[in-house]
Length: 216
Image (cartoon, rainbow, N blue to C red):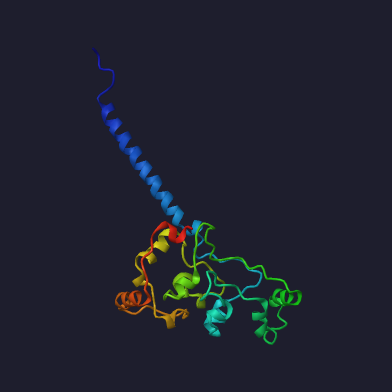
């Protein structure tokens, strides 16, 4: 009986199977990389705001402490946004006629809130507590980056789950002395792992990686 398929068919079949496998794996790799790209995560992207508030000027230049504006960061899940009165404490005297600050003055005159656009916007199904982190040695710049160098506020990290889990699994790499939590320019010491391990013990930090930690 004549052979139905040419002998090369076996080779072509094997190549097709392996080719399809590599194609699927390549597609998965591309999907993962695209999902991590700033285009998707918005890492490094600045948000347009009704007033171009500069952390670089206020924090880096004037040395204003984070807690002056974000008053609830040590006691609440949310850091809080300052009421317009906080802005006017200075700007009733400084740059009081600046056209750029007219939305601030209008907000104060009309007793209305400024509609700021959220920069670090976690999904609604993610629970994050600011006070739990800052009271256990996690610095503001660990998550928000060097805000003292940002003329306009940008998201400094991907905010993806793998980014959160990296800190939750290895807190000793990131915690700092409590006195340095609000120091935007803080740099980890050369023996960070040694000091961090000691702080983890002192602060009673536990590695929490269960789903219910963040998804409640």
